[in-house]
Image (cartoon, rainbow, N blue to C red):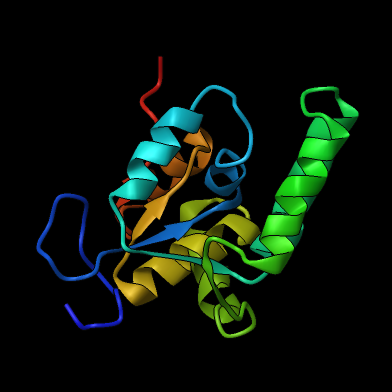
Amino acid sequence: MDGDGRGGHPGGSAALSGAVVDTSALVLLFVPERGADWVRRQWSEFDVHVAPDWVLAESASALLKKVRRGELAPAEGREAIAILAGNPPVRLVATRDLVPAAYEFAVSAHCSLYDAVYATLALQRGDVLLTADAAFARAVATAGVGPEVLSPPVR
């Protein structure tokens, strides 16, 4: 493993371990709903958290939906968005360089291009993919060519 946090897994060596975090997992850091405790526990196992730069807009959109449904108070949504916009808890990576490989991954894994960008980033970095989206986790596992995926146990 190199020193920039690529590779590694929870409970591993003293070297940095990295996780690519998708929107479903990132939003659960701000919203107290099922799966949030699991995400926080997994989060603490990694030294480096990375996501494509569009995760900020996707997360803000997900938070807005929760506000509109009455699942989150508007002030809580504003606070979360202020954190995401001001000091995001993930290292952001430019999406444009990931799109060609993500397209190929999406074709083989039968998942959306949006999801494939996260999987591609994890593959390129040698990181674990942290998601709370069970369907996405299954698609990556079924493809057989994706990164290691951590997702909450299905109950």
